[in-house]
Image (cartoon, rainbow, N blue to C red; front, side):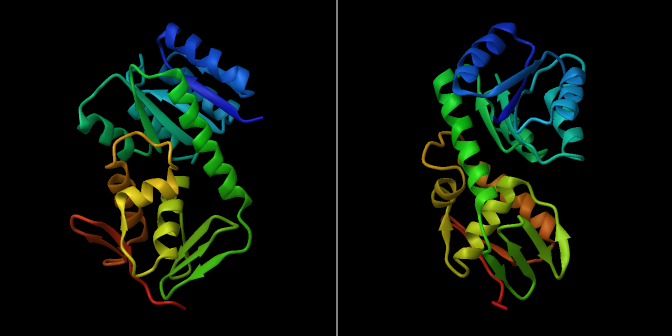
Length: 225
C-alpha cells in the first residue's frame, strides 16, 4: 500500500483530499504545520508528500529544503499562489511537481496516480545500462555516475536524464519530455522541465553535456562508451 503524507493547515482541504485518496487504497497521514510535517515525514516515511507552501511555523519551502537533505521522496507542492516565480521557487528547492489551489480533487488524484505509475515503473526496470564517455546510467539500480563518481538525482531528474540519454544527439522538445517523464495526464507549467534540467546540469557538472536548442528543446551530448 502506497503511503501519502498531506501537510496542509486548511482542515477543509485535508478532509477533502483524504476523502478522495483513502478509497483509492492509499494510507494517508496528515500534519497541519511545518514542524509537525517534517517530523511526520521522517517517522512515516511516505512514498509521496502533498506539501502546502503557506504553513504556520516553518513554511513549505523551508520544510522541503530540509527534507531534501535526507530524502528523495516524491513531493507535489500545493499552492494558492498563481505567479510563475512562486511555482519556480518550489521546484527549485526540490519539488517534483506542483498543483495550484483551487484544484479539482479528481485531477489531483489523477496526478498522484500518474506519479506512482512512474515511480513503480522506475522500480521495475531491469538491466538497462547506458554507458558514455563521462556518464553511466544504470536503470535497474537508479544510479548515475559521472567519471565513476555517483551523482544523487531525484526521481524526476533521473528520468529526464535517461530520456535524453536514450535519444543521444537527438533534440527532444519540452512537450516530448513532459510526455515521457510526467505522462499524458500532465496539466501543469511546461517550465517544470527547464527547472529540473537546470538541477541535472548543476549536479552533473559537465559543460555542454545537456545542450539547449533555443526555441525547440534539449539534446544530450556524450560519446558512447
